[in-house]
Amino acid sequence: MEVDHINKIRSSVKALIIHDHHVLTIKKGNEEKIKYVIPGGGQEFNETLSDAVIRECLEELGEQVKVGPLLWVREFISKNHVENQKDEDRIHIVEHIFEAFIEKVPKHFQPLSPDSTQLEIEWLPIDRLSDYNYYPKEIIPLIKEMSHSKDSKITYVGDIN
View 1 (cartoon, rainbow, N blue to C red):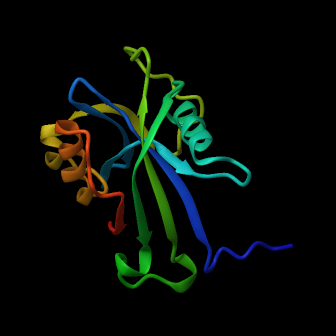
View 2: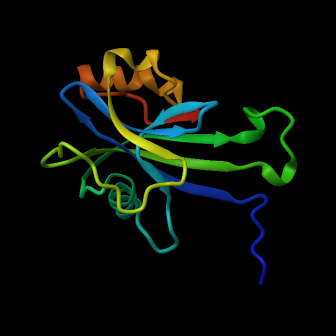
View 3: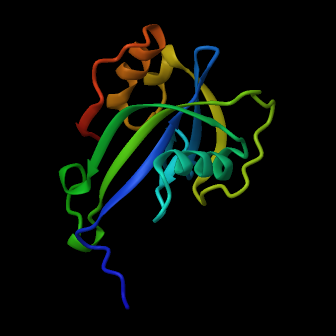
C-alpha cells in the first residue's frame, strides 16, 4: 500500500535545553545557508511525545535527557510561509516544544544518528539569539522571557515560521 503524504499532519517534538544562559542548538545547512534549531524531530507511531524527545536527543546529541514540561505548541503550515510551493511539497507540522535537561553537560557531544544536514552542536547565548539565523525567530522572545521568569502564559503560539 502506498502512503499518501499529501494532506497529512506531522507531529514533531523539540527539546529546549538551557545551561548557563545559553540554548543548545543544532547548526544545520550548507555553504549557502546556515540555520540554528533546537534538537528534535518527528514523533513515531506508538511513541509518546516525551519518548520522542528522549530518542531525538540521543540521535542528535548522543545524550540522555530528562524531559520537563511542555512549553509551547507551534504549527508550521508551509503554504502560509513558502511561496510558489507545489501542492505535493506542502507540509503541516504540529511541533511540541518541551523543556529538557542534561544532567552532566559534556565537553563534546557524540551524536548517535545525526540528521544529514546537521553540522555542529552549539550553545548560543540567549541574549544574542537574534544575532544568529535561529529558527523559528518568533520563539526568541519566549525563550528570553522564560529564561528570566519561569511562568510563561502562552502555550499555543500558532502558525509561525
